[in-house]
Amino acid sequence: MLKIEEMNPWHFLWIGIIFSELFTFVLTSILSYLWWGYISPDVLLIGSIDAFIVALLVIIIVIYFVNMIKEKSIANRLLNQEVKNLRGIIPICMHCKGIRDDKGYWNRVERYIGKHANVSFSHGICPSCFKEHHPEFAE
Image (cartoon, rainbow, N blue to C red):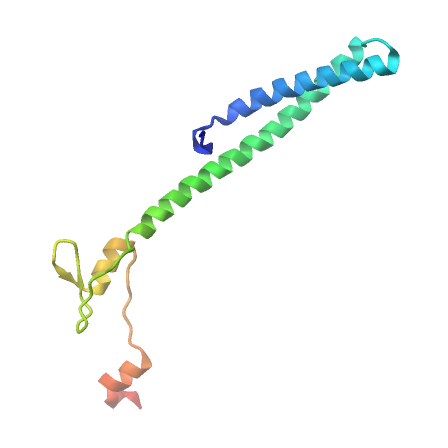
């Protein structure tokens, strides 16, 4: 099955214009014959010009949206790759909260997540830990 990432948006333009011109030619011929009893070349010319302009505008809009879908698809694929970096089971020490990497080395949580999630940490202290570890300054 043809995926939208593999499609060339300019093919839409040519297919749309050709389809629009053929459709307009057939429809204008039928209506001209029914209205006047003959096929009017003037009406065919005006119809063809109108069809070309409308097809051009519609296909340009389609190309714009196809390109947007391609960009969103690529961005979504990149985001999914980043999310995969932190999926699965992470072995963590129940005492020091160190994390074991694929090579068997134990790392600090900040280092492991910083390496695998492309983030950095800033350290602080929460109020309850501040009271517990620094009671002399808690008051």
